[in-house]
Amino acid sequence: MIVIGEKISVMAKKVREALMNRDAKPIQELAVAQANAGAHYIDVSIGPAEDDGPQLMDWAVKIVHEVVQKPICLDTTNVKAMEAGIKAHNNAWGLPIINSTSNEPERFPMMELAGKYGTKVVALTLGKGGLPADAEDRCVIASEIMARGMEFGVPMENILLDPLILQIATMQNQALQSARAIRMFKDLNDPPMQTVVGLSNISNGAPKLVRHIINRNYMTMLLMEGLTHAIIDPLDKDMMDTVKTAEMIMGKTMYAHSYLEM
Image (cartoon, rainbow, N blue to C red; front, side, top):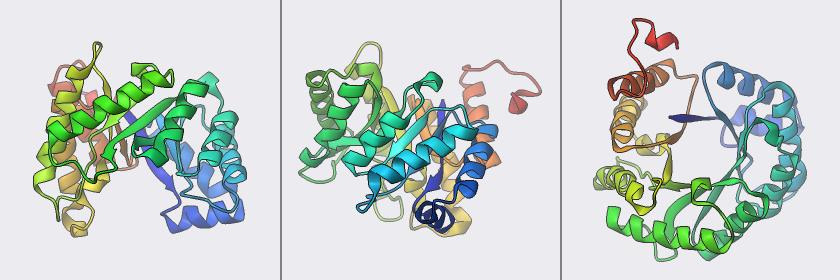
């Protein structure tokens, strides 16, 4: 499974202050730590960044690439900032991922950027009519997004379908629907579509004591359904061990007594 490190997010006070002050050190330290822990991508989330989005994203991408030779997941709702991040990205280390498009008209420009620059793109199975009711609804939305991707020249292998993980504390029945959707997404194309989740959404609103337990167990379920990418905290060693163990049991890696060290 492809791990997208989630730690560089404007939602975190330390990161938000570093972004505002153009202080590279805290951001670079998080980038290096996540890469060393096994992240394949480094997520850089700047939020809407309405005042100076393009300049901020350009700066953030460049300082991460100064210290880490990993592709970046560019996370912003600001289209101009997203384009600036794409242009600043060093594709020698892999294609960036745009986060995200959906079936909402205001997010169509993100798919257009993915076609224009040949990037990968997260596609939230969310439509303008509200939250999907079940896995079948998610598949209908996914099919519409895939068709739009073809219109904009985005190869199916560059689209990462997101089944929309919702809080289990308030929408418990949706956890299984999202997991079912991952399995069903695979049948929408040949070769199977790739998938991605923002894992921590499942435990939002739950007590801190149980959040990690919910996250790790749900991750195992999603891997069994065929999940290919996840935005998670790679500095959480127990989570990374959960991923390695699940993939070993599924036969994706060879068992060895030292498999957790691989």
